[in-house]
Amino acid sequence: MRPIHLLVLGMLLMLATDISAAERLSVYTVNYPLAYFAERIGGDQVEVVFPAPADVDPAYWMPDQSTITAYQQADLILLNGANYAKWVSKVSLPRSKTVDTSRSFKDRYIYSSEVTTHSHGATGTHAHESLAFTTWLDLSLAKLQAEAIYKALALKRPTAEVEFKGNFQALSDNLDQLHSQIREIVARGPGRALLGSHPVYDYLSAGYRINLRSVHWEPDEVPTVSQWNDLNHILEEHKAQYMLWEVGPLPGSTAELNARGITNVVFSPGGNKPDNGDFMSVMQQNITNLKQAFQ
Ligand SMILES: [Zn+2]
Image (cartoon, rainbow, N blue to C red):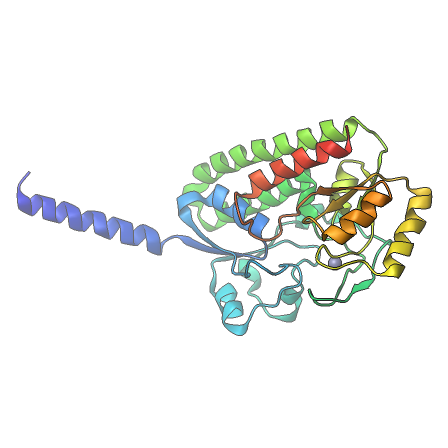
C-alpha cells in the first residue's frame, strides 16, 4: 500500500473512532446496580455515568448543582423507582429521558410497617419511610429492572437493538443463576429466623421467603442501650442466630451479639460502587456468606 493510502486510512480510522465516541448514548443512573446493568446491556454504545462519591449511600445522597445539570443533559436517566434517591423528587428532570426501572412491578413494592426510626450518628440522620426501595435484592426484580433498561436503550437506539437484546439475555441468565442459588440456600432452612441490622432487606426476605426482622443499626456505631433492649425484645419471639449486615460491624457490637448467640453475616446491598469486583462478584460473595446462615 502506498504511503498516501496509509495516511488516508489512518485519518478514516481516527474519524470513525471520533464518531463512535460522540455517538455513544450518555446514560446517568442513581445507583450502582443500574449502572452495572446499563454497561452490560449497552456495551460500546453507551457511556454510563453514576456520579455519586464512593462513600455515600446513593439512596440519601444529594448531588450538587453541576451534577444535577449533568443528569439533566444525559440522553437517558435511569431511576430505581420506589422513592430511591430522595433528591430526584426535589429537582426537575426531563420526563422524556427519565426511566423508572421498577415501574413494571409497582404492585410488588413493599410497604414495611416495622421500622421507621431515625438514626443519629457519624453517618448522619436518616429515616426509612414505609416504602422499601432496595428492590434489586430480589434478583427476579433486578432482572425486570434490567429489562426496562434494555427496552429504553432499544427505543433510543433502534439500530443496536439486536446487540442490546443479546447483552440483556446474557445478563438475565446471570441474574437467574444468582436467583436460583439464593432459593436453593434458603430452602435448606425454611422458616429460619434471621435478623437484619438495617431495614434494607425487605425485597430479599419477601422474594426468598426469609423469616427476617430488622432493626435500624449502623455498622460503624455501637448500638445504644435502648437499641439492645429492642433487640432483646425481638429475640424473645424471633429466635435468630444470624444477623445480616451491609458491612461488618464494630468489634464491640460483634462481641455483644456473639454473647447472645448471634453470628454476623455480611450481605451487601451493593447500592454504591464496590471497592473490588462488580455487581456479580458482590452478589456471589453475599451468597457464599448467606450459606452460613442456612447450614
Ligand atoms: Zn437507615
